[in-house]
Image 1: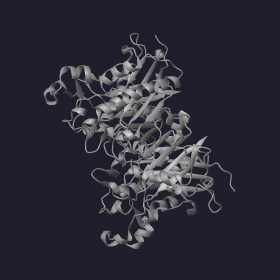
Image 2: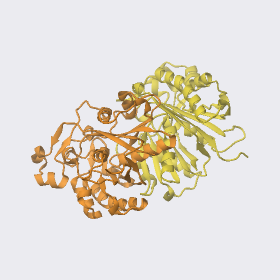
Image 3: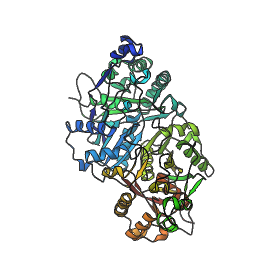
Image 4: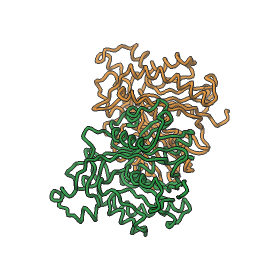
Length: 312
Length: 312
């Protein structure tokens, strides 16, 4: 049985404060703190490439986890901001961390639903091929494409990367998953010359579809809402998380909002939070965690993560 | 059991003849006919997007195959030339062919190894999720990125798209697969401002690694070289196919070179040929077909396709 063994993350130290931009964008403290909930966004260095962010997340993983590179059999990067359109970014990561030639590698193009999809793709690929160790990277630095003068995007999106080690004797195993696509909404969050987001439309989509998908994934896994200890939603904004809590009828202590100091990190938002729950704690129970990503596409995906270790 | 049920293709009718470019590039008939083996390359219309090519391949599929769109559960596009970097191209295809909201969709970024990888990804994803009908698209129109004055690329690459219907009661099922990556070679075929290819380096890579991988995939499937009826190699050029025939020691009647009139179509090269062998014929036996893709990355992948229908 394979699943999530460990997670490494990288959030650049440089932050752009939204409080410094109140005048520029005509916003107030309440908008920053209560509505978007994002006080500053993380920003990579100009010369840091997407593959570099992946490498830094991998270095973070190595501080917590011994790893024999020769045992890695697959490496997947989830990104829509690759170093180059060709070759795939996983190839550059392969070179930079010195993976063996026998490694299967490719990129998946997805945004905020990318971690949940990516987890399913790497796990099913590994099972099919009898692989025992794999790396799932997420890295989607929107600072590469967003217009810093665009209020709709520059106050929200932060840069980050994560790597999830998939293998045997895991901490979390995946239950059944749900997926969906609304191609009609492809233009609501799109990069033509630079990034454009129809925030209202994306919000409405999430507020309408995520509650339905939460029901669907619970039903598919024969679980009731009360049996879930932790709901990790993609961190679009505090407002969307608050809205989901209300619409679904959740205990807000079970729904972390964590992006306040680094921003909406696209496909990295869920693993950044999940990392904090790898170690079981008495404060917060996370035997059964529901994760749900949603956004660009429009696209969404949910699954249940089951903790395998017995509690202390 | 799922596998390949049918294939639709689209090769744009417009061709650029390499014979018309002999003076421009200082090449002769022998170079065109015997060396690269590509007499003309297919070229999409300026306003045809990658997703449009996919739609046309899908329309071709529908001329041969009844299909209830409501039954499709997953759609994957293999491309490194997406309509936009975000959203994923599969989202635009989803909209344009009118797929239901319940469809899982994403893009895979890979080049010439993309079909073999993509086949494995979609089949393992479908098995994992109990899905019964899926669409695997390939579309990588290099005319979007190549410099028409670059002899190394503009004489070789042609535009095309394919769609492979995956489902139950298939014609071909996949055996065990092999994969590999040499990240060190990422710069040998790369798109920075436009496409750059170190043709000699890519050739040497293929000539060295493909024979090894053919041996490896045969061993993994407990098959001898003689038991394979058909070897479909990525159609990089006639010269690489001829070299592989010689180095591996193959009967050339078992190794089609088909790209002469439309060019190297990247991830579409293998399914375009495979389509011709869907129907069993007395002329050519294809009970066991080895497919192998190789190129940008550097990346490669091989598998064995087993015919399920009994022969007439």
